[in-house]
Each structure stands twice: as C-alpha cells, then as structure tokens.
Length: 229
Ligand code: APR
Image (cartoon, rainbow, N blue to C red; front, top):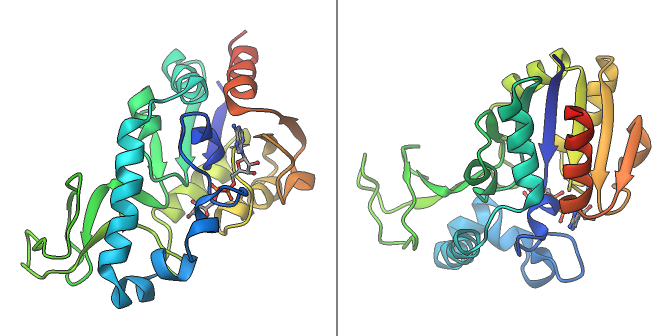
C-alpha cells in the first residue's frame, strides 16, 4: 500500500466550468486580488467581497464533478492505497465526487466565518452584510476562505502527511501560491517521489521527478488507471 498525498488546484475543476485564477480569462483578470481576497479588502468593502463569493458559490453549485475528481475518489475507494487529497480549491467538487480524506487548505465556499468572534456555520447560498453571527450576533459574516496574508488550514497535518508519503502528486495548480507551491520541494526533501499532472508545465515543474501534461480529465484518470492496474 502506497501512501499518496495529492495536491489539487483550480485546473482540476476547469473542465467542470469553474474559472481558474491566472489564465487569460481567469478570475484575477477581472478582479483585484487586494479587493476581494484579503482581510483589508473585506474591511473596506464587505458588500463587494460577499458578492464576489456569492457568485463563486453559485458557480460551484451549478457545476458537476468531472472525470478527474471521480478518478481520485475511485483511487481512494479502491482501498489499495492510502490517499489524502489536499485541495486549494474552495469548491466542493471533490467531496461531491466521493473523496473522503480531504483537506480544504484554503477553506470552502460552503462555510461562513465570523470576522468578530471566529465562529463557523454553514454558508447560505447568498451571504449578506446584515447576516448576524449565530454565536455573537456581530454583523461581520465572511466566507470561510483563506485570503492572502492569512494562514492556510491544517498545515501541520499536511506537512506530516507529506513527510510520511511514498508519492506526492500535484494536479492543476500553477505553483504561484505558497505554502502549497513549496510542497514539491518539501516532499523531495523527505525523499518522497513526486509527479506533476497539469495542462502545461507549472512554475515548479523542474522540481518534479516526472510530469504528464494535458487536460485533467484525461491525465488524471489515466494515472489512476495505471495505479490500479
Ligand atoms: N487540466 C489540468 N490543468 C489545467 C486545466 C485543465 N483542464 N486548465 C488549467 N489548468 C492548469 C493551468 O495550466 C494552471 O497551471 O491549472 C493551473 C491553474 O492555476 P491557477 O489559476 O494559478 O490556480 P491555482 O494554482 O489553484 O491557484 C492557487 O491562488 O489566488 C489563489 O487562493 C487561490 O487557491 C488559489 C491559489
């Protein structure tokens, strides 16, 4: 049984119709990161930020998991390997495809977080600035999403899993955002074999032992089929 840690990014959900961040038609082409993905942006204009994530939440709800999400769930369900998916994505397509061992290191659109007291609750389809916190009643509801300048979730657990892994696979991520962009180097350091599956070579492609480039709905099911052959 191999222990496999799989990092995913926006590229795995692209063929489900969810926009990536850094493509020419990506989300960061239309929006300033500082406005919609920082605590300072939220403090300045919470309405704009909630509207941005309400749109993302609606897009995720309208999307369906694709063959790549399903292949990762099947690899886990097969039981021959110990699989952990660590996703930077805030959509819920991995869990809807059936992945169980899953860490949303950048949070999730389905969660709400009180900026005043830190309480968490399930996000309604449309979040409003007037929504009171169910715990402290403050009107400071924000999406439970990790913004720039904030610490990603469950990092100690992720690093421990990486160090203990036999194989690290990075899928559909450009390698621009740390700490996830550093996982390949962390894995190598620990003597873990590394594989990149991405549409094109990522920023860190040279650090991987092997890489296969192509659309996730092709390269991911092909890789899983080989693992289960
Ligand atoms: N199949 C495989 N890979 C794809 C596909 C596809 N169909 N379409 C695009 N890609 C690849 C792109 O080539 C690119 O390398 O997915 C990657 C997407 O990169 P980004 O848009 O930068 O997304 P990601 O790496 O997930 O971004 C990381 O940045 O702003 C943030 O917090 C946000 O979690 C996000 C983080």
